[in-house]
Length: 257
Image (cartoon, rainbow, N blue to C red):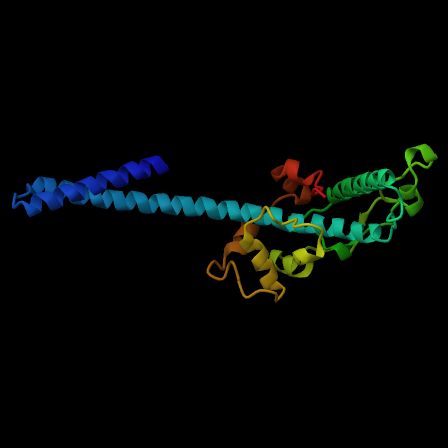
């Protein structure tokens, strides 16, 4: 499309130059040629406008799809943040480097297993907007500090995951996208690493705006953006359909350390 647009641009430019050169020499341009040049310029303008509108529409569609992904990444990041809050209680500072590396691997395995169990629980969630963290029963974890302090030769096997499966509270109800972001988005500084770095920066600014931490409203000139997201994706069969949209991004979501 960009190549064709460039070629059309050049053709219109040449037509305009021809018209100007003939006019400057005093040579009369045949009326039929003038009409054809005018029609060409008009067609080029119409083509370029249609191309731009098509490009803008596709970009907007991609942003709306990415908004669905964004709210689910907020959810998983909050789950991981909650799990890491529990891990912060463990003390592995005084063990040797080999055991410390082993402990970090066990912690990573614990996150993966807990995310897997949350993923299984979410198959029962029938809404496109995720549940709030407070709407989930997250049981205690198996992992204990002595499991991290030990090594494989010590005969203590680490046990990862929850002591029982996580579950959705009966009174759980979905929020609107805007209310969900306002309720659940945590500023990046609260996380380890920048988990949102792959998103358009305007999403994070919009989230901060909803939480009164920014003056930038990404969608102030596009007031129907969020409602159209729900029109397009609100009919989805909850997390199962969202998972089909992003099969390799959500089912085993675990950001790099």
